[in-house]
Length: 359
Image (cartoon, rainbow, N blue to C red):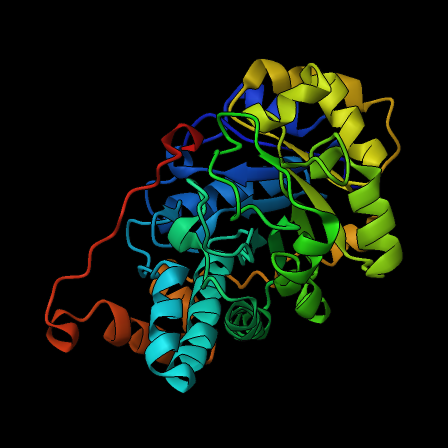
């Protein structure tokens, strides 16, 4: 049975404490961070070990591209999605083709090392947010919709389910909900007609959604991830979305309004989330696992849709990825377009993740 919690682990191999936590009844997922990664073979061994101790578990990662990429050493670099948006302004056809390639390449390499899903794509608009920025494809909803649709086509072709974040949109407010309370004072109509459009327009391609830790004060006094108005009335009833709802990390500052971690987990599940994430706080993870024992299990069929098409490990990343028929071509296309110094006249630079405390 898949449980309601997704937790993290300490290092590059499981400790006895990790194993104890993973084997608890309501732990249904593990999310990996940069601290859990040295190279591809190590990650695959880690994922195989996690599944040895708990077969009913989803393994996730944030492998968006650009500054949010947990898998780096030996993996093909991915551009920030904002670079696809820049290309879209110049050559929409090439940008859409590259978006597909990026989605396929990302998914193939993540699946190859035993990880089910990357929490992608980001469907937020590029606005004034301190934490979104070039993680967003574009400022215009129509461009985000077009690029994200192609990116998700690539993901699905490789065998990975999709997760749109951060519903209904995090880009229009400056504060970073990782470290502070974030409040958006716009009306529901303004949000629906702007930030929510990429989510609504790509719903047919989405297998999961992750709500924002943002309070949309004209709609509810709770962050979206704790709000029955957003999760039940809007996502389930109005939009008719029947996919998985992941909470964002409940250790983030934007979630603390709901109380201690036990209260946050219960609030997220009661509001309509299927799986609650508790990361980077081992004490909180233990408390959450204990509190979750009193909660119902999530819809098992719904959760199973997020399992990735994990290939047989062939001893190294490249050999394993050769099992994906389009991987080599996607890698070549992405590298030549965004990282070939001769092609663009400059050395490609990887920016750093501003949320280093998530590593």
